[in-house]
Amino acid sequence: MNFSAQERKLVERLRKQERQWRVTRWLLLIMGVGIAAAWSWLLWYTYKLVGADREGVSELLLALAYPKVLFGLMVAAGMVGFALRDWWGHPTRLLLLKLIDELDRRDVASEEKHQHDAPQKPNHDRNQD
Image 1 (cartoon, rainbow, N blue to C red):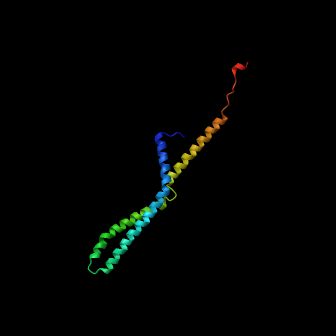
Image 2: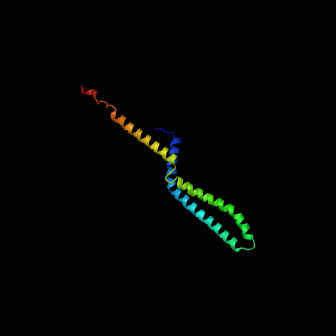
Image 3: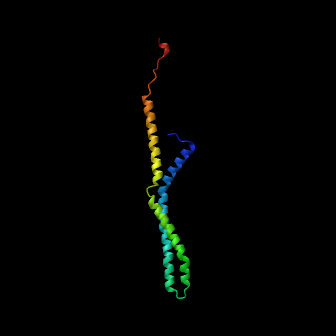
């Protein structure tokens, strides 16, 4: 298959992304779980303060922190979900790379077949008469 220079560059970029995904998926999973743990601890600590405080100041702290905690937990859930969804690689990228590899194999096989089937030119020397 004949690709232009830009198309070859795009294919190599896809291959690079596929290689990097092996490390990226673990980073996403670990970071997502870590962020969820940190925000969950903050929420637990704030609830603990609300129970111990009798002056009502911690309720304000809880009201200010709760939306941020929910946003942090949603980001963490998104990171974990994205890592788990594409754990074995992005399906479109994998399929495209497999198709390109298969077409390359077929091109190589057909070139070898054409070289093998091509008639050999006789090597006649004109000075043998």
